[in-house]
Amino acid sequence: MSNNALQHNNEIRNIIIVGGGTAGWMAANLLQHHLAEHGFNCTLIESPDIPTIGVGEGSTPQLKNFFTTLGLSESQWMPACQATYKVGIQFNNWSSQANNSHYFHPFPSIVDKHTARVFLQQCIAKQQGRMAEAHPDRYFLAAQLAKQGLSPKVKQPPALGLNYAYHFDSALLGQYLQKIALKQGIDYLQGKVVGINKHPNNDISEVVLEDGRQVGGELFIDCSGFQGLLIDKLLGNTFVNYNNQLFNDKAIALPSEKLQPLASQTQATALNNGWAWQIPLTNRTGNGYVYASHYCNADKAETELRRHLGMLNHANEAKHLSMKVGRLAQHWKHNCLAVGLSQGFIEPLEATALHLVQHTVESFVGAFLAGNFSSQHQVQFNQRINNRFDGIKDYIVAHYKINNRNDSLYWQDNRENDDISASLRALLDCWDKGGNLIEEINQQQIAAYYPIVSWFCLLAGYGRFSQAGPTAMVDHTQLTGMDGTLQSLSLLFKDHQQALTF
Image 1 (cartoon, rainbow, N blue to C red):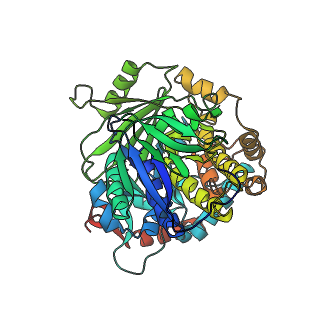
Image 2: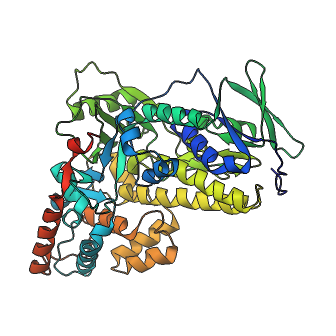
Image 3: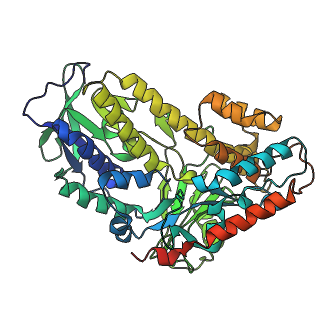
């Protein structure tokens, strides 16, 4: 796509999306919603030969904004996708310290304003070697709700503004979004893309299907998964590999019966060579193991997962998946935008996959409109998306880098790995020396990827206090009052199962 703006008249401008699934249909809905009024229409091409994998999946709170944008209520989409509410992630056994064998990563909310401040104060005090109670679980309402199996929904108005996300069946969500897209007027073709034709400036003019059909457009969206059919194989692109920092390259998915009572949190439990997820859906539980094949083969990993779940002799079949961890150097190249796995992937520890899809498409729309439908802001856009990928990656790498487990070579190698970014190195150095981590995060301008509270929860949750004195409360009255406030607030929220009865 040249820097010249597209000339608009009554002719419809076509956006061609190659690939379906959750990423493809999310992109189609967002692009049609934002660009239809400017004369654009979306066509999605999906190969019938590519199966969908219906594993349980989680999201970040930004997914709420996606459904709000499309005008879809929770009572509409959640039952169709076996979805449940998610108030945060419980990390188990990532630290070998007795008092830090688990911690909860909440989604910070406005209701945590005062308790979060106390938490930060306690962490800073403990960094400086003073007596303090710095475990994050005590300070956030979401942790209390998860512990009691409560939802983020209050029993009666007014709402308290609690931040939350979702669990869902990814295959069902893709199917649901397809139905919504077709209602929006998005065209749908089935066929396998086998080639592309280009303009003299190397912009794509049309894609060629296996049956000979040629589908032309002005803008092409690559949602073809790890193969990167347009953005990589046909246009060529540099892939920035994260595997020297994130060792995990394989995953196993294994469903089990529905949890009773139904939980409102994701569980992430450290195992010998990676970690296991547990995601509660309304009809079943999504389980899996993310691991590094350099340390563990597939059979051994599946046995370890089954033992962890108590399913050694269970008939449920496990699905084995490969992951290509890293990102493209250019997510928008010529007149092609990569979205989803085709643009990159960071392992699912913090459930950021759909967040990156949503952020990429919405940021592209902003840049595309600001440039009068040209590639004027392409360079800035690519840098913005790269920064977000790298910022999220650093937070996830930190989980492995600061572990203190000694039960396997995998965990020891992760801890001793010095191939980390300058940004993460500066953050850990600041924390370990008792410096001002808040100032460091703000100076690096990375709070947009993970807020200050999340970094403190991670580091304090592991018990990473090199100068710490004995665990005790700085202000017993203050903390006791805070405990009472959180307990009182939790009484206002519905049971999780009850909240899903729309």
